[in-house]
Length: 488
Image (tube, rainbow, N blue to C red; front, side):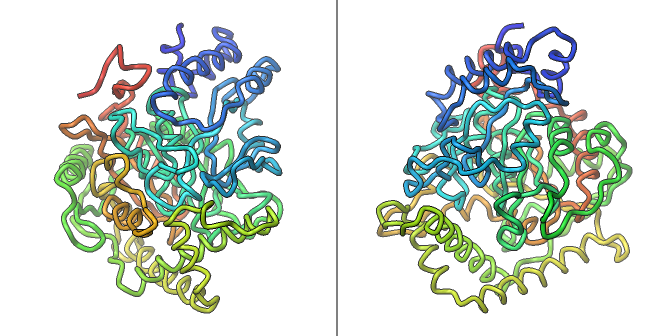
């Protein structure tokens, strides 16, 4: 098989070739390096590469369920000791990882071979991937469009076929938004399903979670199997899993009761492309035997909305303060982007008691969502809505300038008006599924919010949808599959 043919396979299939002796781990890694070298100059998905190290690891004969499969790590939160780590900020220019995160060790034990790090907006605080430090990552479906964010570098890498899957993390939608914009499957796991050890315990009151973006549902399930579970000293753990997630693939989800809406959290209609995508998905789900009930996730009132803003501002102050303490110096204005500076100002002006009030307000809202998803109260099994409220925005629109520091937040907010942050507030699992493309050839993902602790149901439904409406053969114009098939 040539490099493009290998790259068209998901991670499970690539690992199976290695197990059968049909391809070596070194051959898989070399082929991925060639794809990256061909595509990254166009996409700017990777901001650092460790190819020599990866080839050495592949030659050493990795073992595990993903033995030899090439992988990429997002340049945010997750560190590898001694390797560049900037979190998209000029403040961290030249910084090296001080330790190796627990999740990295678990990826390596699973046999994954890490080839480098992917682009992220500064500290991951905006739904695009256009940091001043590294420049914008471009969407492989249209190079003039954003990948959304914050896991935009990883999404571009996977969508273009550089690697079959890549690390992503999610504080307010950052796995699911770029999955939607780039035509990928993106699952945000239940709170505490994946450990943040050794450096972090309960990051931002449990809103932050680690996982990946993938081309196939089974890759996401098997990868989560490889990394799930608490580490020693974690403040709490997610509910126990009934069986491996990989065993959920192809299993009948049963007849589900799915609440759905095409309206945003404020009750406004979405972009017509997003409305069409969710209506088409609702019809598909009905054809598969599920019951669809038109209803919304409990609305976010003004108090909860203000609380969300408080959490993001204080989170930014915490992140900058963390790095100032770690680096032993204060960040200058020139080292931080305008939006970060404004969030930092707001966060440092917020009293500790006001932050705790905001957390209580969001937790009260989380109980409303739990009630709506409770079978004991005639609730629904899942909520369905568009992942993004607009198609991917043009490059340069979701950015701030000194005179308009909040411009990126306001413009970015228009693309995420369905409030994917609900899953972070509640800790519930959620996923974006790539079932639709608009007339311009841009992916339009649909979003399912599940019950706390029940990723298994999401995987069962996702694999059912994947079988009914396969997407693996759809390739963007800038990809390994462009010469073979370009989706229209």
